[in-house]
Image 1 (tube, rainbow over the protein chains, first blue to last red):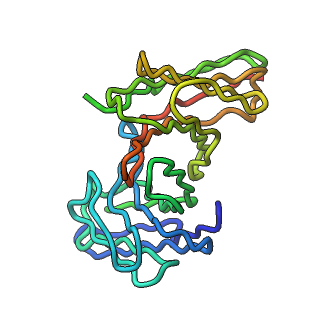
Image 2: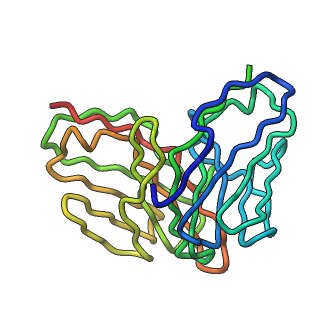
Length: 114
Length: 112
């Protein structure tokens, strides 16, 4: 998985609790992304980062926040988890933010919000 | 209307068949076209990418882009049970875009 580690791999939580997912890379790539994958929707971008402390929103960012304090770590936080945030979350990395934006993915985190 | 449309399938074919997977898109600014393969409960892995129109071949896989029709295809020759996976197309634009747009993914099963 291209030097990308996502943790935890599985998590079950209750509605209203905060949840943080971690993405760690060893490739020293500048760009990092968080996606969610749901049946019928494919991969949808939540947030992305183009450098340390530089982040921006994707198409489904409501209810999520991110932080990147080091090149290798990108955290996704659900401030108050809801059942609609039950999904599989993927982190991706890229060394190019331009058109040739080849992204490499982690193994994913399965999150269930009860 | 979604920027990228992909038939979700499922698609089931016998081993050895030629498989054709397709995506259509609406944004004429897309320049790079990618195919990812995703096995069950795994992350997507890059299979191939092409720039602009034309064909690209890698072993049993051929990626084809027709920009005039806004249509891309992935062909798999001599399909194997190990090719059973979900295949996602993805596209990006030339000028400073920092995201890919993905198709919904096609679930493919190759039957021995």
